[in-house]
Length: 179
Picture (spheres, rainbow, N blue to C red):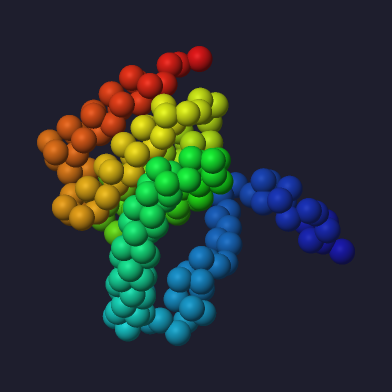
């Protein structure tokens, strides 16, 4: 029996004077081409059109949700004034709305909604202050988000967005001291 045939393949290959190139199966290519159903360069115009239609539908749905959330923000702001004894409950609801807005703001082209929603959400979750200070900072966030949405200020808003962000930061700095 040939001794080379009984050797481990890797050890046998190492004994060869020429390098041996192993080419593993290309499983990624199978995934990308849907097991060969997509031929050529892998571009499927129909799949791209479906993806773009789905993205547009999602954007439309999120824009509708944003309109509802702006109304919810206004309602929450009004309830904070009308029912001071229930503010903790209202702040929890407000935090949930702000968290939701944070999730989709950038997707619909309102980066400042994401930024201000995140700021409000974190502020309400992390700050232990109460009374009118918490109310004032929350109202500043709500007013800023409504302004961004209704104006509309898209993206980061250029100089107007910078000014609005700076004013909101000043409001936070004025009322909230760092620990």
